[in-house]
Length: 109
Image (tube, rainbow, N blue to C red; front, side, top):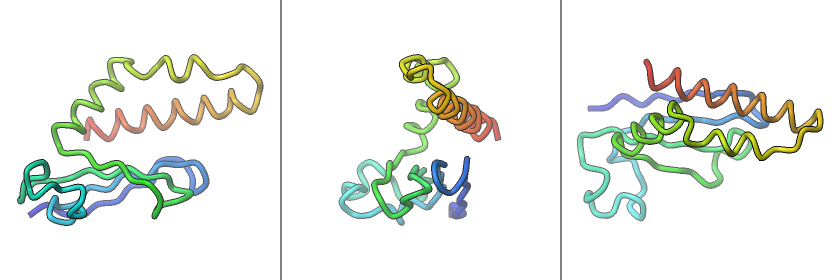
């Protein structure tokens, strides 16, 4: 059985919460009658730390691995490049880069 684990990356206002949960705990409307999230496997849930009960992204282990590989390969770097250059957004970009590096570190562990 998969052990439940929750990690906060960043701070409570603009951080990301990543949870590792048993696939059986994924809501029924997301789980699709065990066709996507197979029993006995792990699911990864990503949410906004400022609104933890708000929208959540659910990943299978394979989807999470593909997402992390995309981050490592720079697939999402263009999202950081599109930010304006003013100081506030530069700080936000630095925070986003820190969060991206955290995702890479999480994948390595």
